[in-house]
Image 1 (cartoon, rainbow, N blue to C red):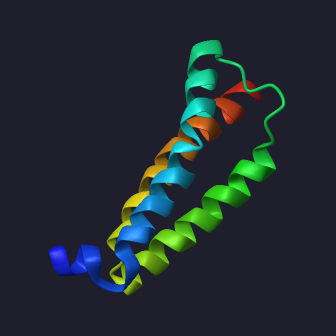
Image 2: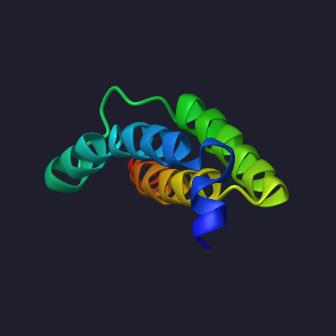
Amino acid sequence: MLDLLFNGGEVIGFIAAFLTTIAFIPQVFKVLKTKSVEGLSLTTYLLYVSGVFLWFIHGVNLESLSMIVGNFVSILLTLVILFFIIKSKK
């Protein structure tokens, strides 16, 4: 496990994954608090979650723990936002 963590720059990968993933947390909290997705684009978030899903699959193929964890969490956070965007359109 430690070999996987420190092999091939995984530490840098985890730092990058952490920073890019937490970037969505304020948006998720705002959406949850206000129940408003005004100004958020469904297309943008659909494209983003599709790309992140492909990065997740790529991470699985590379056995890159940082790519797997970071992208999995990003998918979950993005799905929360997508849920509220789609719900608001009904």
